[in-house]
Length: 145
Length: 131
Image (cartoon, rainbow over all chains, first blue to last red):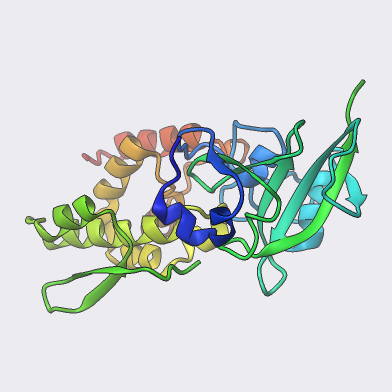
């Protein structure tokens, strides 16, 4: 699927590394849900969006970290592909507020849902320095054998 | 989230409304006729969508200036919101809540877009609102 010029303008690093649209747009779920592997609902700690009751309902990096810890993730140090683990990355803006989450694929690339728009496959770097800011934390969970 | 490459349309007073649009969408907007509220809704909806189209943040989406402007249009825009939501699944839930004061979405439906749309469409039917 060809990448739209508008998309490229919001993610300038995508000009240099692979960035492939992998689905059609849908309003049903967002990037947090996609990283969480849930395509049935829209996640965000705000009005009429889904947010687990046991996680603080605040737009903070800590709350988003707790969301993924609740699914078995723990903080890790880098975005490398590790056998037996799945990783997610949380991006934050200049005010350190969470904006986006991505999930690592088995081949080492990453997958993201762009709000209500497409899923895309990308590198961790080519999603940075654009609309979502920078990677703030990376987390991993052990895959079931 | 702001865009660097902007194409402009203008309202009836010549005021520039910044929006990023595919050219064919721009053409459609400048040819819009009909009721002021409808045209105004379409213009601000396009601005809202274009500037939040990649956002996962409900906070950003419902606090965008164009979204807030649509809320300011009041009850006259409610049928337009309902119809647009039914056709596109756009997230007008907060706008409808703010304008009408109604809250037909039960907590267990939060985040489930189609269920929330159904809740509002039922509310419209129960309140005899045509759209």
